[in-house]
Image (cartoon, rainbow, N blue to C red; front, side, top):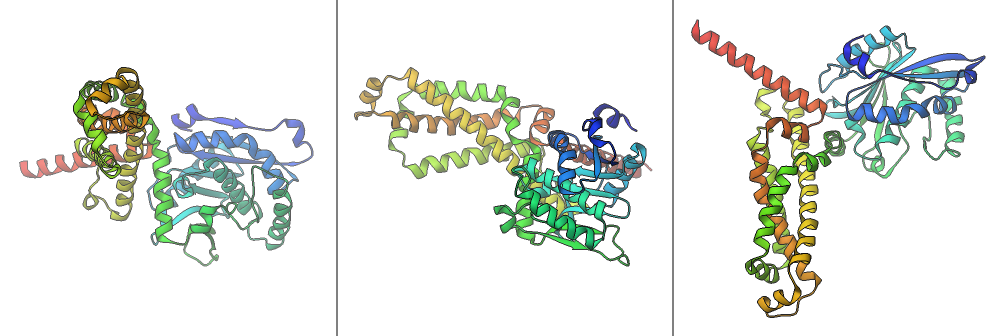
Amino acid sequence: MNSNQDSHRQTYDEDHESGRGKQTKVVGLVPAPELPEEIVSKVADDLPDLLSRFVEDRVHWKIDSVTDPLTGVAGESKQILEKTEESKTQQGWDFAICVTDLPIFQDRLLVVADVNVKSDMAVISLPSLGSTPMKKRVREAIIQMVDEMYHGKSEEARERQERKTEETSKEDNEVNKKGSRQLMSRRPTELVSPIKRVTFSDESDEEIDVRYLVNSKVSGSIRLISGMVLANRPWTIFPSFKSVLAVAFATGAYALIFPTLWMLSDEYDTWRFLALMLTSILAMVTWVILAHDLWESPHKSSSKFIVRRYNIATFFTLFVGVIFYYVSLFFMFLAAVSLLIPPSLMERELVTSVHFGNYVWLAWLGASFATIIGALGAGLESEETVLNTTYGYRQQKRKEEAREREEREKEEKEYEKST
């Protein structure tokens, strides 16, 4: 067991008395660090009871969890399953399920989960589940993975479980599965982006037996991008950019005490406010990407398809994060102008009656100008701060690997020139 496993290991179990007279099966979960680990820790306590109700009540289920980054390759599950097998063998588990933050594809179709029934292993791609409600989706997907491995290809057992699942779902508020061949309950997103179950014969070259994939490239891409943005946790941009926010607020507040901005806010139409807001947000996002080289070149990667999706995820991560930043500035300015600028003073300058809407327009205008100012400050932040804010664990690792690869290539070129 490596150091990551030692430092992140947790065991979840029911009371030993509940397992008397039953065969015990251990399900090992191998989540990647950060979001996968966080979600697994939330659902693990519920799994023994749920597996008994939805998979097999004649088994005493135990849950074990070992966090491991699982050095895999985006786009395929082969290496991920190989690493999962190492953990399964070391821990002596009956079943092993990896919850990875890597996207997996089959002919550019998004793969949500793979199952190797023969080896009792499975992998769930967290970004492929989309954005919300993540906890329920992961819980239902884990139940289905265990169901696939436990019942194997026995249609009789599967039909029995199908009837039991339908009966149990009627009485369960947390899990709403409708059958033993379905990965998750049908929510509105599954109606728009349905997940298809595909089985492979023993003669197939595939190393998996069952695969769940999104049978649409367009909806699959939307699902993937939203899941990757969630994994990057864009809301963390606010506490990480406190100094940028302080400078932007101080500069904007100083500008707002002058009548020029009051007059502009009174004259502008709504479309102009919207245009300024969008321009300021895009300016900050673009400047942060360029200043810190967050955009990956598809030409330097073996898979342009995957790199493009990581770039899109980077853009929307920053976009959502800057929206949090923008809204914070707006409410700070609204409080400031309401406190500092008397209505009578504004009325004398505007030569018209003043109401609360005037303060809203002024704060809105100030937030747009301050965001552009903040963009310059964000460009001066340390690269480490920006990477920690923008990227989740997996993309930070990819960034480090890309930098190391570029340094090796540079050293090789210099060596060739010298020889």
